Length: 355
Image 1 (cartoon, rainbow, N blue to C red):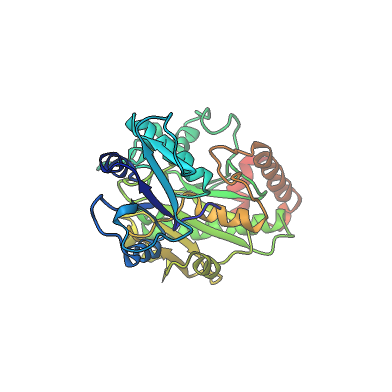
Image 2 (image 1 turned 135 degrees about the vertical axis):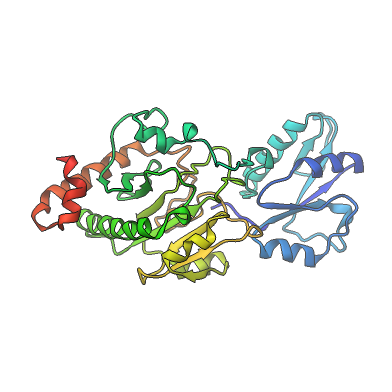
């Protein structure tokens, strides 16, 4: 997993430093304007909110920490520099690309640049652009060209996810195009509880070796604002084999979650949130704050570490793992067929279309 909470000290001519500080506005980074005194307290505050911090080296009030990355700003790529990292100010867009390479080289997670963030709208992102809505309409070009629904109730369908670095990883998705489950009414959330119980029962049959299953949602705000432009902003709840718990995620992240019931979720629908089910299926933990930076696919990254994945193959955009997705389809359908006589009437009714 890439690191958050990094220090980037920028050095060079003031006019060049100012151009860079103004250009590099990232979701996971606090940028201190040129001329503002940077103190250890300012750094501590940024770190408390899980963000990196960038500032002019000449504005720092003390001796730069040894773990700070110093970036020299030059006006010509041919200029020499005593520092390992440099940015040339010739082209604004190239400044962003140059820094993104530095972030990658330093294993730093600074989030999306503001230019890649959706401003949303009163009606939310368009259904026309939604991969899940396209899938339901039979247009599977952006998903993978085969039918992969495993379960279908009145308001939800269940599919194995793209980016399946572990087998048995499913998504529960409402048919209605909403940004998060926080937009669903009490009756539909009651149905969701039934669907989730069925999904875990089915996965337990398909993967008896799994000790437990982690359930979480990355809820988008009701307008979709603030999310990356290439994010999927149609509500979907993740269910994956994992021994991670909500308490473990709190401990690892250092974030403080609130404990709620699923029916309290309506109070959180306006803004993005991270929701994780606790070991008590009636209780959930939620984190909702604009101040704290939560990396993309954060829980997926934690599960990847749990199974000793050390590269970035947790990223579904670059590692779709179609073969594991197909294997999960086969495993689940096989388990349903083998255990058909033992299944509840509800599971039978919602999966009979498979046979």
